[in-house]
Each structure stands twice: as structure tokens, then as C-alpha cells.
Length: 113
Length: 115
Image (cartoon, rainbow over all chains, first blue to last red; front, top):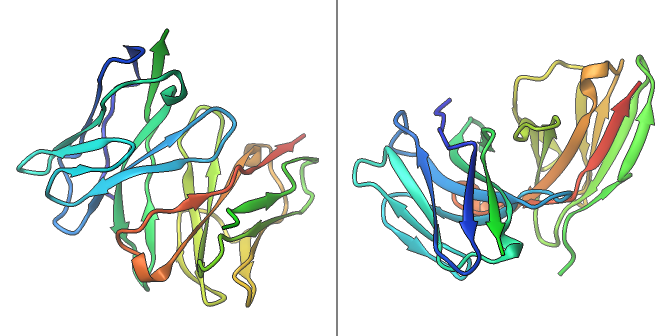
């Protein structure tokens, strides 16, 4: 399975932008890049996904390198509610119509007031 | 719109016992997957169900089994519990129509402690 590499932890000041990096050098052409986050005592929550082009939604932006071997999740203005573990995941087809998410340990983001 | 609900939220079992965890998928979602999350780790894929059939499985032994019902709700059964089965068990639902791109909606999980 294609794997991702993320820093264990990052810190950000409140109301400043945050750039969360992810390396996925073994990504295949059909793998989608997904980001989820997990707040304390909750299940993971979808943030954003992309294939080749940069993507924006109400929560964040996703910048994907041209060779697709890395990507960056951008939170434009961090709030205290953004403190969570952020997972960069390659969503891969595992046969018979099944797509599974392979989570790593993620990046624990702390937001400083 | 009702989200993914799981029950029970917490439970304690002893080694060798059996456990059943339940999940109601989000309205309109016909695919359910289960994940195991050990403390301090990311979730690990157990299996996925679509149309009441298992159609994908991670690296888990056969004592982990499941069911999906006609209303798309699901159960996870674990037999012969081991201490290492202590974890948060997460259920996620999705629409088959968006299988390769769509988001998964996770419940808050069932925390199982095996003594």
C-alpha cells in the first residue's frame, strides 16, 4: 500500500495560516489524496481531497505538487477549534468496489491562543 | 440528516469473551466500513460492506466478522477477545456512487476495553 509521511506535531498561533506537509513518494496514478482530521474524543472528519489540481473548500486548501509526490494542507486562519490530529491519506482501490483509507499516525496540530 | 451513530459508546469485556458493536449509517449511504484505532495510532481498516456482503478486508483475523442489514446498518463481531483488541472501533458510511472520491462519515466510535 502506498504510504504517507507527516511530521509528528506542529504548532501554530491562532489566526495565522498553517501549512501541514505530507510526502507520498510512492503514490500511484489512481490514488486520491485525502485529508481527515480527528478532534479529541471524536471520529475522523473529512477535510478535503484532490487528485492532481489544487483544491479549495470552506475548511481548507490542498496544494498538490506537480509530480504528486507531496501535498500541503493549508488552513488559512487557525482557530482553537482546529487543534486536532491531521491525517494525510491515499485512498486506494482494494478490489471488488472497495476503497479503503490507510491512515498513518498523522500530525498533531496545537493552536496557541 | 442523521449522522453515523454507534453503540455502545464504551464497554468492558474479559479475555476470551465475544463482543458485538453496532452502527447506523448516515441516511442514503449504502456502504459501511469499520476501523480499529489503538491508543496513539491512526485508524486501521478492518473491512467494508456493500449490499450486505463484505467486499474488502484489511489485515485482521477471521475472528473479526461483520454483518450489514437491508437498512444498511451494520454490526462488528469479535470472538475470543484478546487484550490487544482494546481499542476505539470506528464505523464509517459512504455512498457507493462516490466510492473513489467521496468522503467517509465517521461515527464517534465504541471504546472497547479487554481485561
